Image (cartoon, rainbow, N blue to C red):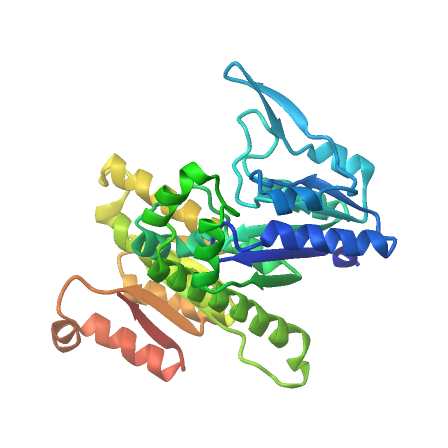
Length: 360
């Protein structure tokens, strides 16, 4: 009953700017309006694209909120006004947008969750490079560290995720024709972001993401007659900032792929107690816990001297199916031969039918 009172959530996803997400949303808005649906524009960013701007004609637009910030009048989406007007469907563009300081919510995706809670259906859009767990992959492909990101859980909350797809050749042609950016920005875009090999890799990421969302939908809505193993992942991290971040993000991708719940375990040994560990390490740990929570994990922190035994205890308590650990900083061969604790962990996991994944 509670779910039925919530609004339905549809997300258009694309490999980059200019593929036509906003254009498609506005096309859908016109179709819904013709069918007598009360649909209104909560926020749309046309980026001065002629074809997109023309589609705004004839659609009801909810006035934006003016905010005085650093000597300027800036516009933001008016969440409260949307809730008060309560249209059946609202279009909200730029899902990863960071709101101006002083807004009720820090991020636009949080605004969207509020609108959905009020029982209003939302159609939104985002680019693949804004997905939190894909941040390192996108940085490796493009060389750009995307700052505005949405947690993976936002995609999992969507009732429908639709890919807006173009070939890299078509996208580059659109750019050259001035359909994405103004003429003075075209050459810079071609030199930096809009390279055929990069676009191809981002396209693959977008297609995979939508495919995994479809698999999840099939498993939850269609395959009810089959008894499926409920995947539960346990990601074990240390106080090593870089390794922990990688393990958390990769485990989040695995949990998303398997449509399973997951946990992050940190075992605090006596030598890593708060009075002995450096302040910067403590800060990194807190940031990693925050990242894990944002990505949908439940964080478990345990004080113990025996890490392996603690892992096994949590595995039994939470009915874990897969344990994820970071690659050891020493030879795995040496570990298996000389470390009885590690062998004991492997043996016990094998006997309990639990998978062990060692993440690079």
